[in-house]
Image 1 (spheres, rainbow, N blue to C red):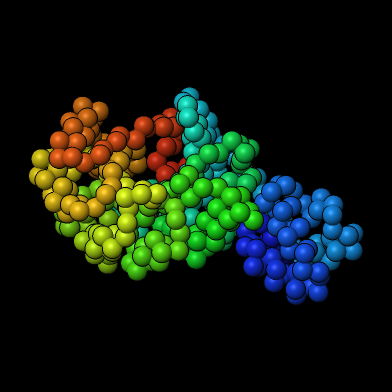
Image 2 (image 1 turned 60 degrees about the vertical axis):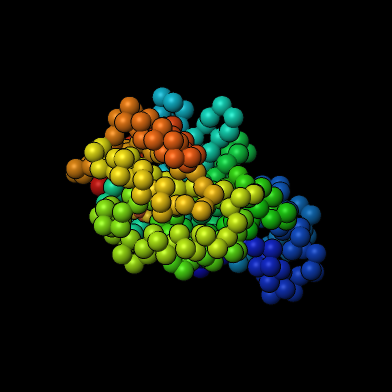
Length: 341
Ligand code: SF4
């Protein structure tokens, strides 16, 4: 019989486990501490539980940690880890060390339903949701677990399409009883799935990044077919209802494609549709994927586009390109693994 995994359970769920086994109430706090504060790898290590309690727990549960099956290391220090989620199912997590912080980019689904044309994960199609255990294991089983300072949900999958598990993972990352991270160290990226994006805004305090890539509906729809189901204008109307001026950051992700989406017309329309919001734009170099006519814009054009946006008063940053030599495009590593089987 498959054992249930403890890692990823919220405090309320741990209390339910304890109640269902007829254990004293305080055992929930002990188990939670062992899982999230003391980083144990086995139930046997929970030394303040009686031997009988540990045996009882082991009959039904395991901690549920499993290491990555491979790692590729870039010359710039970026590491891409591949986790196996079951037969023929893989997800990627990228560890990105920088001078002032170490960011981990994690996945929320195996593949993705959203079919963005520029994305290798989109080309893989959808192969399943990740449980909260499988989302958090990408952090907990990382060799650099305790060195990670920031987490971005920008790996494989659309977080809003697996919102309940993502919200649970955010609870465990930020709650005092668990990892107690500041939500300011977490950024969740979405294409703007409706209505989930609003539920996310209401139930979490993490930063939000919206994949924009074009201010024009027809052009955005060509890049992101789900624009048809979730028009960016509707997403913007929701964003306008909330306060982005203080603790919480709103950003728009913008991959700059050669000759496609960085003209003066784009600058004007971006300023127009985003007017009234407090936000920043993150310009991103495109990581080439196989069989795609899309190309990245060159550094000079990206700098010019940044300057034009700044001239409109828009805070605009350019994301450093990392891990170019190790299949940097999200989904490329797992696709290669799938093709090699
Ligand atoms: S860019 Fe994100 S939402 Fe679009 S297909 Fe890729 S993983 Fe899915």
